Length: 272
Image (cartoon, rainbow, N blue to C red; front, side, top):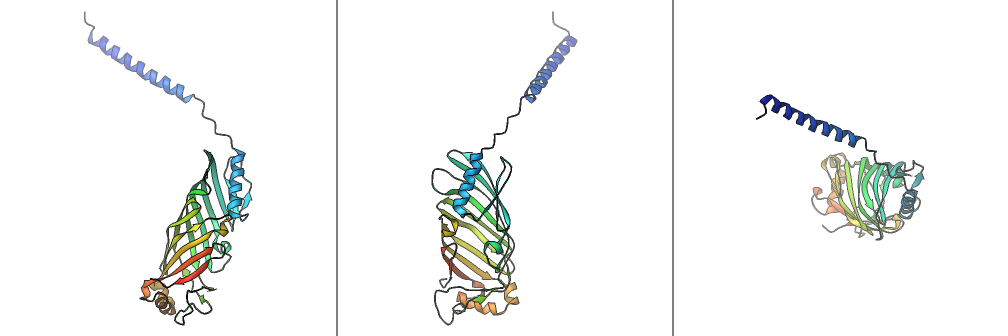
C-alpha cells in the first residue's frame, strides 16, 4: 500500500521544518557563547617600548601618560608619536604613528618649514636593532628664504657655492614622501622624493644606525632639479643651476650627505 501524495507532501514539509528548527537552535546556541576576554594590558610591554625610545632618541621624546593597554605616547617637536605595541616571541611588534611634528622645530632651522607625519611597522627581537619600515610624509613643506652654508668639494672660482654660502629662495616642495626600510643596524632610503611646480628632489642612500640616533652615520645623495616655475620667478637660479650641473639648466645637480646625523657634511657633487 503506497502512501497518498498528500501524506508524502506533509512528510516532506515536516522534514524541512525540522531542519530549519535545528539550524535556528544551533545559531542560538552559538550566539550565547561568551565573548573572548581581551588580553590584559602588560605593563612590561610599555616599559620595554619606553626603554627602546630612550636608547634610540636619548630623551628627545617626552613621554605622555596614557590609558593602560593603550598606545605608548610621546611628545616630539610640537607633535605626537604613538607606538601601539604587543608581545611577539622574544621581542615586540609595534605600529608607529606620528602626527603634527614641526620641521622648523625638529631641524632647529627657519629654512625648513612644514609638518611631518609618519606611519609604519617595526619589530624587535634577539638580533640587535629594529626591523620593518616607516613612511614619512611632509605636509605644506617649504625650503629656503634664509642663507645656508654649503661645503663644496672644490674652491674653484666657477663654483657659486665656494664663497660664503648662498641664499635660497622660498621653494615649495609639494608632495614629499619617503619610505625608510630598517634592517638591524641599517636604515635605507627607499622611494624618497618630492615634486612640485618649483622643484624635483630625490634622496638615495642609507644610515648606519648608532645609539642615540643623532650619532648615526649618513651616506646619501640628494638630487635637485629646479623647474621652470622657480627659474622664471628667480632668473639668477637658471645660471646657478647651469653652473652647478655643468650642463643644461634642466639637468639638475647633486649633493652628497655624509657624517653624523646631528651635524652632517653637505657637499656639492660635481660628478654627473
